Image: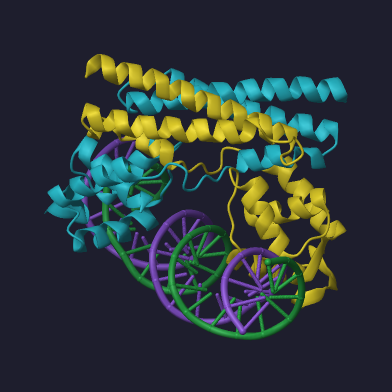
Length: 165
Length: 165
DNA sequence: GGGATCATGTAACGAGTTACATGATTTG
DNA sequence: CAAATCATGTAACTCGTTACATGATCCC
């Protein structure tokens, strides 16, 4: 369901687009939130068209098909946003790494935490220099908060590891 | 792969266990990090035994099978922890909701953000009163950081929405 | 004996990834 | 004309969820 919502959300906020465009937008604007490649997007658009959530607005050059969101599609996004329980599923490989840090010796653990810290720093840098329009402002701010708290956790953990090691 | 790692990690830190035990541990100690039900765990343990990562240590009452991690299994967890790229996949339905907030009118958006805030508060409360042994201390601390930053984001966003609305 | 919990599984389906395959158009 | 990019798809596979199914044991 989340893939549908993401696609409908992109069509709603950025206007009609082809599967190819949507795949690019996943790469550039949505990829720290959700991922999907063209092999998942193309068949999903076909199903969504069959379900009346999108329509093929017109076909362009090179077989390019432009999809537009329908009223039914808009209703579905709104319904999902308003009704979706945020506690449903969380899967974080980084948190799993944190969970299992105790299995490593101190040197290895330090290396892992440093890698995690570098990852959050890179994300912070990416988000910080956005021209502003690429992300919804609220998602941008959430990303910043999360990156900063990840870095704070890493610093705290590194200090603890170095103290005990 | 992450399911294997999670199972091996539990077996490594908490000792031999049955599929049933592992499913319980997923519910109680790992569930804000990774989820898996018994229907996924039982077949995976069989495959892992075939791959030499775990062994059936003995069979107990009621067909209970106790699995233990092997040296090969330990090596795999360590390798994964040390070598895994944290930037791989992140999928957050909450972040997707944040991304799409602009599609809602202010009243609806406020309701959604308040729900998200309540969710993070509930998690904070759960983590805060842990006896300490249930989570690895580093994962616990990461969870606390994330919950607090989620609440901070929600407060900021609610203020912004109320200001504009 | 009856309900709760222990304990294990299978089957069908949906979601997501990787590899393969094809052809049109633009740019150098 | 060759390489890059545009543009769409299929097939095979793995991962994850939901529904179904079974039987043992414990406690009242």
